[in-house]
Length: 103
Image (cartoon, rainbow, N blue to C red; front, side, top):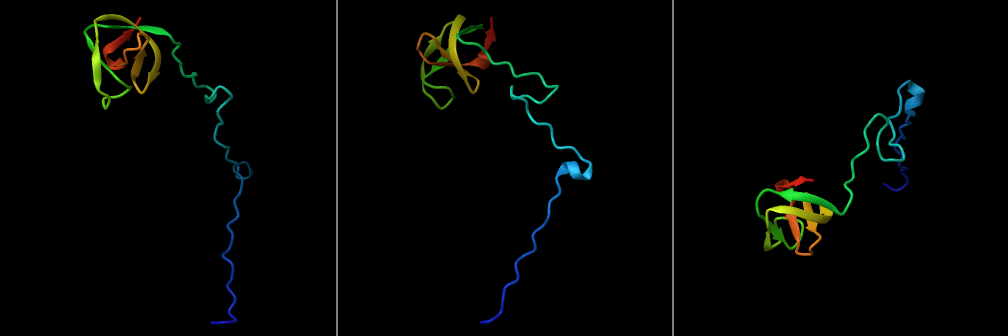
């Protein structure tokens, strides 16, 4: 097979969307939202939540972390939030935010 030359594969030309009459997708603005879309609400910390019943406190944010205690019914201050879990200001651990209401 010596002497046979390989032919390069043809390169497909692409046409920019503006050239064929269509418009490019909307680009997010500097705030990270698409025009006409409300900006995402970012909770401020520290913030307070309330529990209607005692809630397990875990070592980290998630069901895979061991329970280290119980947060009593009432008001609690959170310093941060991660994946639906809130870190208690007391330093005792994390609580599942499904069992809380914002104050």
